[in-house]
Image (cartoon, rainbow, N blue to C red; front, top):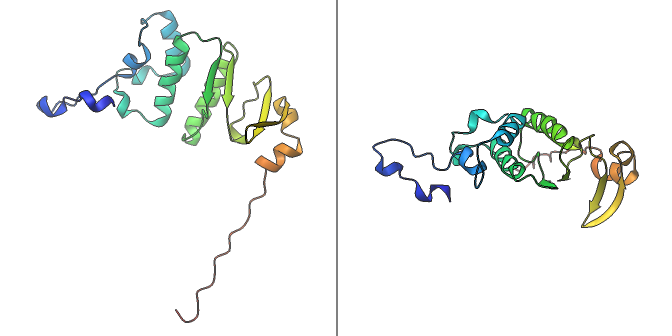
Length: 166
């Protein structure tokens, strides 16, 4: 959608970057102290002047979180915050979300055990839309429901033998 207004073909070889991350975050807001605090929290100063269509998955996720935080929500809902991120980006996002959880009420929807945040007050384990278990992270991780769903033993793969007639 952002490339709808792309004028690159008419700009003598100059690349039209489209909507910048700054513009996407600041929609209906000003560049003020609150904006700066969010930018510092997410450590995204370096990408503010880049076009959003040139951002990686993790960078775009940070832009969207910054945009949501700028509205000062009572509850911030983040779905799959680690999906599509490499190990380094997951580690960074985990650290930033842990900081955020100290000042912002959040609902994190996650489907991976390794991305569970210890700073969560309460965890609800759901299966097919039904709550199966609730509790604190350190308690819930010990339940059979949790262990059966997230700590399944790895199965080995067997490679079939080549057919002798091949």
